Length: 435
Image 1 (cartoon, rainbow, N blue to C red):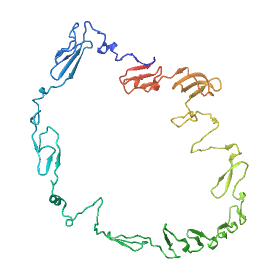
Image 2: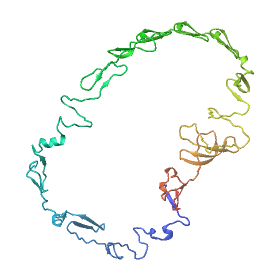
Image 3: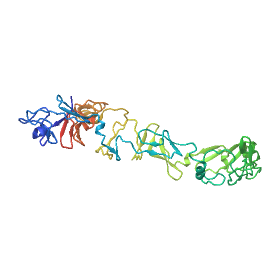
Image 4: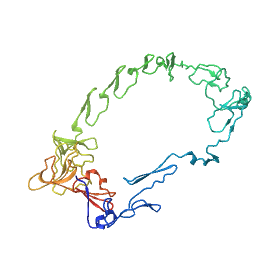
């Protein structure tokens, strides 16, 4: 199976080269009569010689349990049940465990416990207020005397009965029928209809359905109403000029014969307009494109022609936006190709993944050496005798990629570089090759 394999080169930090501790394995001792050992607080836990044995002696005591497994050479320490006798000398805030706490006594005149009048902490108790434990004098001292004391601030909730509240008076404004409201007696708010007719005032009509405009009272020049909700303009009563005329109350007509025309424009009748191109085109010619001279005249350009299918520009053409060619673009130039862009986008018309690259023609037209991207293997490759008219290719060699790792693990490199021949260089300068 292909994986990353470490290369051993001059200067590599390889245990086999250095014969260091990293070359030792858990299954093989590399030195004569070697053995492993370990200790805890000065006591050997592993073999202390080549023939020593590992042993665990149980020293279980109250609350601590030690078990040993000779087969796996492991010792397990666990906590067992702790007897009360081991805790009987312990205290909490000076009181020995198992002793009664100091009694809690309540005021028997006001409060009561659910059983008795003392509490020693050994069982749950409930403290309750006795019936009549708080008299009305105590409540009156807290709330004040109703009808005598005053309260300020905001109140929420509901009130039962009559409440005499002296609110600030609420009075009517423009468009509201006169009324006052002091918070103690109901008042009705009604919209006041304007009875004015004509002038600049629009009368208001009030009905059970709401408030609206009374258009029947509007009177102005050419403006009338056909009903309370409809507005009409009679164009025959409006003063029109500059060739504008109203043939009836709702139609507007432009008489071109009454308008001053120039620069090749004439009006043979009130409803017709003629354009004499001989007065606005400075030159003439077949298939020429017209351009403006800036003085009201047009020029038929001899170097800018269009015959219905072909557009010909004689001279330089400047395109400041995007140039899109949906057909075949041909470039004929005798000098070297110079491109100012830093990046070249190829296969921009593709909507799916595919191959693409650069072909250097050799002896035969359109046939040559190709350096291209193979989408099937996601690698750049090479091949020869390639026909540039093809849309895909099969490389016979690949370009190797070098990954500079941010750590020492080659498997942390992007998966796309897990390809045969690629190289990974770690931060420890170790070199790996994928094969």
